[in-house]
Structures are given as C-alpha cells and as structure tokens.
Length: 315
Image (cartoon, rainbow, N blue to C red):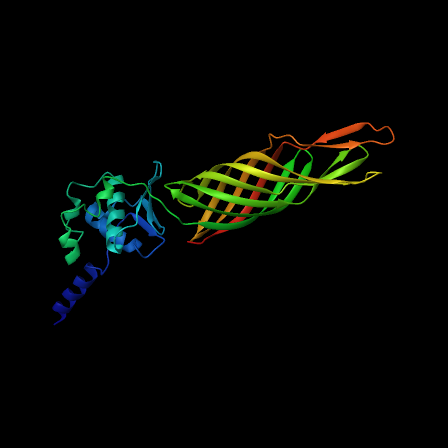
C-alpha cells in the first residue's frame, strides 16, 4: 500500500497544474492575461523562451501594444488591433514575442503546446475568409481614441524675470500608431518691466495645439512635441504721473519640447520642458512729461517652461 501512495505523490509533484514560460511576461489586463500568454509561449519556444527576456503587453480599447526587452538589444515594440476573444489575443501576443526571439518554427499554429480552439458555426461558415491572425503578416495601422486629461504647475522664465502658473491639458497620444495630439491651456502670474517714468505689468495666458510622438522603454515614456501657440498679452501700466493705461493684444508663437512620463495603471505622472518663441514683436510706449518725448520697451520674444503634472486616462 505504501508504494502506490508514494508513486501517486511523485506523479502529482512532477506535473504542476499550471506551467509558465521562462520568459517573463506581464500584462496590464486580464484579456489577455500574462499567464495565458506565457502558457502559449511554452508551445512555441523551448522552455517558453530565454529567462533573460521580458515581455510587456499593454491593452487599449482598440489596440494591443507588445514590447520585448532582451539584454544587449534594443527594445522591440509593435501595436496590433485588439480583435478576437481573450484566447485569440493571447495567441497573437505569443506569436509576435516568439518571432522576435528568432525561434518560431514553421507551422507553429499546429504546435502541440497550443491546443486548437473549436470554431463556432458562424466561424465555420466563413472559414474561407481571412484568418484572424492575418494581421501578423499584413499589419494594419493602429488607431486608438484613448484620451488623457491632465493638470499641472509650471515655472517660466523670460528676459524680464520669472513666473509660476497652472496648466490644463488633454490629448490622444496614440491616435495613429505612436503619433497623436495635445491641447494645453495655461495661465501664469504677472511679470513687470520698466517703461519711462513708470512700469508695465503683463500677463500672457496661452493655448497651444501640439503634434506628439511617443517612444517607450519598460517603465518610461518620452514624448517630443511641436506646437503652435496663441498668446493673449495683457498690459497694465502703473506708477505713471499722468495716467495709467491698460491694453490687450494677441500674438502667435511656436513651441518645442519633450515630456517624460511614468505610466501608472491607466494614468501617468509627467514632467515637460519646452521653449516658446514669439516672433511677432510687441512693445509698450510711454510719453514722458514735461518733455513730451516717447520712450518704449519691448516684451521678451522667448520663454522657457518646466511643467510637472498628472494625467488620467478617460477612455
């Protein structure tokens, strides 16, 4: 009686319920889950791939972004449509990871480690149509409408001093593949410059429309951007002997910068550094008494900004 019991115990310990690939796989969703992808890698690669490799799968509403990191090599990345059920997505991700590891043999779809899925009657009726994994050979352009809504604080410096303020931003960073757009509205505190016998305080709230690109590592995102900027320049005279006047004017500018973001679930913390140029020159003029002569001072035609904030995923 002891010998059969011992054999049974050895059999149970020799075959664990769930086997995972040697390559580390992580996913931010349960569809597909990291375990499902890892199990399919076991059927495609010996031992499920090398232990030194790690794969990350991120899921949006309509796309699936797959990254593979291996020592000594550049991180590989690909975005495919998030079509099919969870099992189809897991198989799709595993096939892409296996192809990057240069170890996917011909006919991997029939590998014993990947059990076939029964077809529904509707799928059998359309079996002559394109396969659900055809986008691996003919990838289509990935379009994602996932949006971010964020807020932050900025510091600004120009030729007349410094300022601080608040910024609100929204955008779609993956509208087409890794390219997207963003809109930002900002308002800073006033600055001041001397003009003749008095001084001029000025504010320049802005609204900008930017085109962005995205480059990812395992834990960080870098987004360079170029933008057109609309500024509303408000001036308020102070300290003049005769009369203090105010004025408002609009001018256009251009900006370029880069944002460094740290994703966290569907949200992200970020820091942006950018430069703004105001090619349309603006100046304030004052008439000095009692001589009646004019004196003027030009507003700075450049700014440097640094903004820190947080954005929330809203779709």
